[in-house]
Length: 206
Image (cartoon, rainbow, N blue to C red; front, side, top):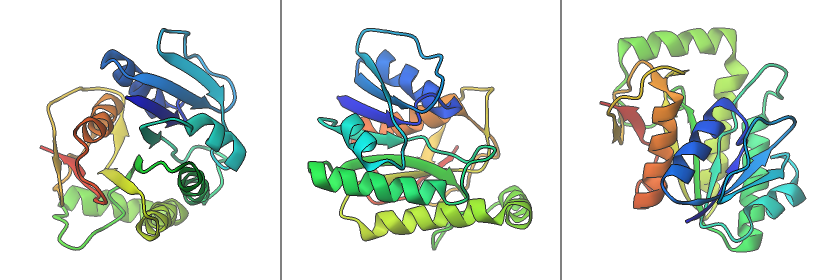
């Protein structure tokens, strides 16, 4: 597949780039600012601000799948995920592209979710300390529901660096308490390769 990865120089994005190349895909990696991605066969590195329509459109053209690895970092706008998703949806519609995969937290709830005590406790802390982050996650999903894209939003409770364990994508959880970025990247790639969970929000569980 030809894949485009937005925020490819972030911690999740770099893992997704590695996984996609290892599985034989051609990758257009959109980066903002400095990057330590190395030149490799089948990898094209392109400057891309995810909120800039023209830069997004240039990055994703001719792609079979568009991935977004945008997350909240220090000093990022409170609505960065929502604004970027609006921009991506607009560009994909203009180019006639359909498949879009992104990731957000389990604070984005769906009817029927199996919510563990750990999940409830940790998300309560985020609601109190960083409510705009959860609001942004929910709002970017609302943007996708209103679109005609074949989207998938993978949900995780908390990302970390370590571990690369077996996992299952479950429609309503329950979630694993911690998920490595390698696992999250594998999950994103898995739904792309299998064309699964269309217009759904699976949770990484076990």
